[in-house]
Structures are given as C-alpha cells and as structure tokens.
Amino acid sequence: RPFQEVTRDLQLKKEQVYQLHADFVYAQQSSWRLQTELEEVKQELDFLHKQPNGRFLASMLEEREQEYMKNRQSVTELREKLRGATSALETLQTELRICKSWEQQVE
Image (cartoon, rainbow, N blue to C red):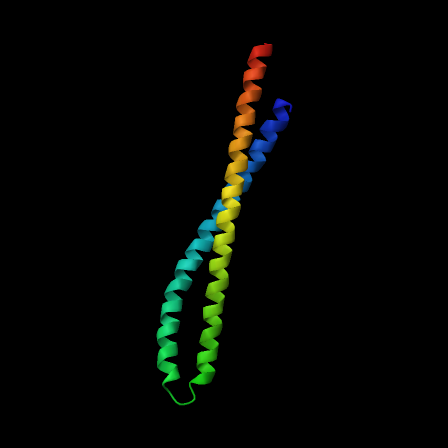
C-alpha cells in the first residue's frame, strides 16, 4: 500500500485506540463505583428481606444489581475491542516500518 495511505490508517487507528481506552477507563471507573453500590445493595437486600413490606424495595434494589451486571458486561466488551484495536494498530505500525524501509531503498 502507498506510504500515505498506511500513515493515514495508522493515525485513524491511533485515534480509535485512544477513544476505546478512554471509554474503557470510564467504564472501569463506573464498574468500580457500581461494585461498591452492589455491596451496599446486597446489605440492604438482606435487611429488607427481613422486614415487613420490604419486598417492593427489595425488587428496586435487585434492578440496581442487574444494572451492575450489564455494566460489567460492557467493560468486558470494551476490553475485547481495545485488544482488537491495539492489535490492528500494531499491524499498521509494522506496515509503516515496511513502507519506510521500501522508501529508503527506492531513494
């Protein structure tokens, strides 16, 4: 491929990796926050299940627990996307090195 095309692709992949990394960090922070909330929710659930009329409140807390599980899944998905993008970036960097060596040989 032409050197300019590889360079452009490399820049785009770098931007994608940076964005994925930012998304991953945000999701991981959300996951940690939700993990803390989940522990609180479990304690509240234990308490509520022992109280009269606590079932309604318990169901609300169970929804929060499900939200945590969804967030944890999105963190896993983002981690996989980040790995894939990093791999693609490494491939492009290799192509760029090859293109540069070809350019030097042509000159």
